[in-house]
Length: 68
Image 1: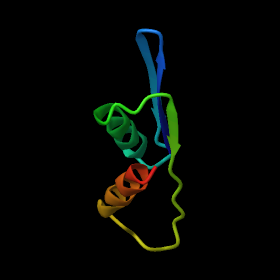
Image 2: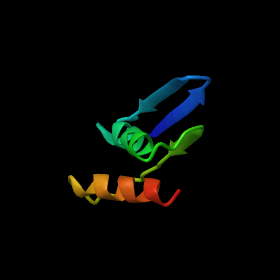
Image 3: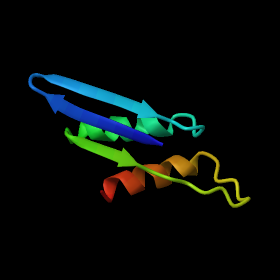
Image 4: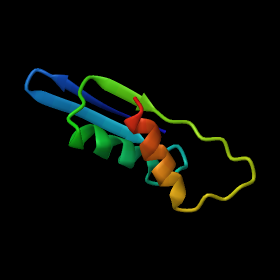
């Protein structure tokens, strides 16, 4: 999943893609917006290895974004 938040003049161009992880890309974009991180693309990957993480997977996604 990924999101970007690009400043172009006085405009902001932003987009996200969940890639099957419903809500994951939106969470990435929310962090970029809250912290006003511009001109960045953040991509987070996740491999499913048979262990169901449940809602805690979003904590891991957000932690990965904060490390960038």
